[in-house]
Amino acid sequence: MPVYENVEALQILPNFHFTSRGKSEGVTKNDVVLATGGSKGVVKVWKSFRRQGDGDGFGAIAGLKLLAEQDASLIFGEERGGYTGLLLTSHKHNLSNAGDATMSGISREELIAIDAEHNITFLNLADSEDGDGPSLLHPNRTIIGHNDEILDLKIIPDRNAGNEEGIVRRVAVATNSAQVRLFELGTYSCKVLDGHKDTVLSIDVSPCGRYLATAGKDQTMRLWDLKTGKCIAVATGHTEAIGAAALSRKVGRFDVAGKAAKNGGGSFVVTASKDKTLKRWNLPGSFVLGEIASTEQDAEELHVFASTRAHDKVSFVFTTE
Image 1 (cartoon, rainbow, N blue to C red):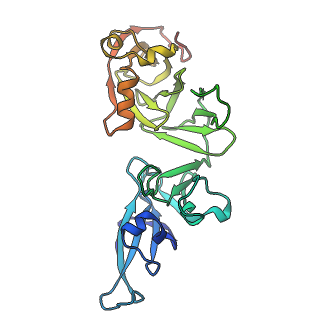
Image 2 (cartoon, one colour; image 1 turned 90 degrees about the horizontal axis):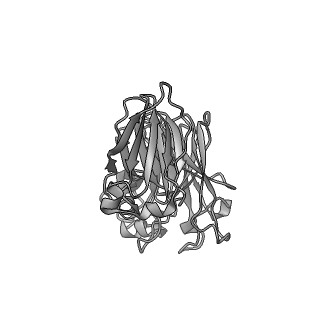
Image 3 (spheres, helix red, strand yellow; image 1 turned 30 degrees about the vertical axis):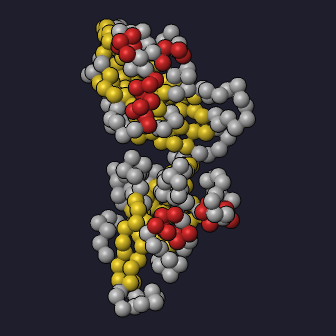
């Protein structure tokens, strides 16, 4: 059966019939369910089907039916080298981090995907029956295997800093690539923010800990929602690489919206570029940004509020007040 890619890894999923997706697809314990990964950087789940007339379900396998594949926004991708290995793990290996399970043991199974950049991603196999939990093949966590030169690093403030119990402390790191990585301190877990087309040179975190600004050689500044990992705003207008970006520091201003925000009364980002200009970009407010982060809306296009020619050689380190 053609799958139109080089298949680098295959893993049998013997307990898939216990999951809600398996039940809804009519998967039985006699069916062969497997996961594949390869050059296109997408993990897919397949179910075998038998030749007609086999009756008891134990006849020869005639082909495979696609049951599920990774969401396009979460795949590793072909341009980054694809997946090189798959492995099934569960609570027995003491590696699972899926939390409470509806079915003890079996539903906590995770599929480990290894990619060409030597990252290890734990993919969810326990599809939530009520829709509140992570979806099938959603990445539960990622262990980063390789980092290049670190160009910038910021500590992400925690909005619940007053409550020490359960606090997850994170840092954002730009590592001489087009991806930005969010590391959980104390573990190897990491989330990758992928959207820039060239090396990210500068990052900054809002004082409220909700947003991350990134800028780089692709001449754009991007704003990310740190809860969802989605790009929620993009600023284009510089003609050369952006070497520095800084978010405004007054926490309350991030909630200012409407005309007040448009006219400069809210939060903003300042960028400095190799084109020798400084630009200010006003943000539309947390309500608008939250709507974009939680829906399928495209990222907000930001417009230059103010621009000025700076020094002959722009300093790539600055802060805002």
